[in-house]
Every structure is written in C-alpha cells, then in structure tokens.
Length: 328
Image (tube, rainbow, N blue to C red; front, side):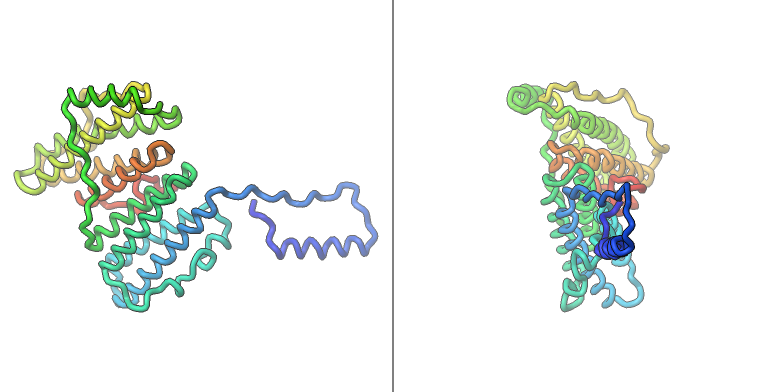
C-alpha cells in the first residue's frame, strides 16, 4: 500500500478537527498509518531513470528531425520506453514519472543527434547500468544487466562496431586440469545460493557447444563458417571457466549430455543460422539469472552482453529485455 499523500494527511486533520468540535469520543482510536520501509533500490532506480529520460530525449530530438517515418529509431526508442517501465516498476507513481527523475526538455540536445551520437549515448548509458550492478538487489541486478545488454545491441544497430572483448581460447585438457587444481587451492567457495545459477549457465554452455558443432557443419566455407568457428571456441572457453569456478568452490560441475535434441531440423545454411540465433537467445536467460548472483554479476553481465550481440548478429528478433521473461 502506498504511503499517505500530503492531501491525505490534510484530510485526516480536517476530520480530527470536526471530531473534537463535536465532543464525541472514540473508544477504539484508529492507529496512524505506519511508514513503509524505504526501498533500498530507490536511489539506484531514480539515477537509472534520470539516465533513461536523458536517452529518450536524444531519441525524441533525432525522431523530430527524421520526419514522419521513425523506422529503426522508433523501434529502438520503444525499447528504451520498456526499459524505463521496468526500472520504475516498484516505485510509486509520482516518483516513477519522467518529471520526478529528470526533465526531458532540459536533457534535450541543442541539435538533432546523429546515429553515431545515439550509439555513443547508448554505450554511456549501458556503462551506467553496469556501474550500479554491485549495489543492486538481485532483482534489480538482473534488470540492469538485461538493459545494459539491450543498450549494447542498440549501439550496434546504430552502427557502432565496437566488439566485446574476445574470450581466451579454450585451454588444453592438461592446462585445464592444472588451472583447476591451482584455483581449487586459492579460490573462495561458491556461495550455495549462486551454485544453481552457475550450474544452469554451464549446462547452457554445454548445449551451445554441441549446437555450434551442428551449425558449423551446415554453413558453407566463408565468413559465416568462420564466425561459427570463433563463437564455438568462445563458448568452449566460457564453459571451461564455469567448470573451473565450480570445481574450485567444491561443487561437481554439471556434465555435458551425450547428445541434445535440436529445437527444429537443421538441413541447410538458413536453418543453421536460425539455430545459432536460438542458442544465443537461450543463453541470455541463463546469464540474466546468473546476474542476480552477487559473486558473478560482472561476468554474467559480460556474457549476457556477448550473447545478446551474437543473437542479433545471427538475425534473432531481440526483445527489449534480453533474458527476461515477457511478464517481467
């Protein structure tokens, strides 16, 4: 229940005055409403809303200059509106309104932003999302990681070619065993609450490694096959990282299945690229969940960003909130 407004208190004061004038007594006086506990995420949410409003103001300026056909800009702006709704979801209506967190008119640029300007603004805003990850509650951390990944995809759609840092190549079995033994001796134990999310991410990577083996088999020699080969190695590296972390924390890493059922038949290059898009989209859900785990937020957010960008590269129709369900 929202806290009483100033108007409510004034009304209660007026009623109290009438009660005293009438000389009536009340054997069971009504207890004053108890103040609600402050939402610990409120300062973070308000800061993120202010940044979102500034970004929306830039889109509005660009759309005003573009004329009547919004095109891609309109779609990207609609995603940012969805981001704002999610960030404001737990705030009372007055605090969640645009005027409460930032003034769009005050944030509007003097001249219409170019696509490059918007891409840079998306990247800056995504960085702000990630800067608040450590201080956020688990639920807000998932949202921030998802919104940051969406911002990176927006920047790519606007022409930003900045690529995520390439993961290290998959180590050899001997090197992997040595690294695991070394990590086991020095790394802290994996928090029990985080183990399930990390195991789920590992299981998803096992499936992705298998799936990319199928993808590569159906792509013709050329850039697409090289992309698939590079991504296959990246998922192997991520899989090995999770295995080492789990083993170092005393958990038994989830083993790969002997085989995996594909979501649809793969018979040519077109269906192979569809499978690649599907695999990356499925991984975003695992990494959004892992972003809620305090011990692995930075790594999960980076993985979520990479999977989101790869999903877009393979032609996936990305939602506004990658990795989060439609109900969130």
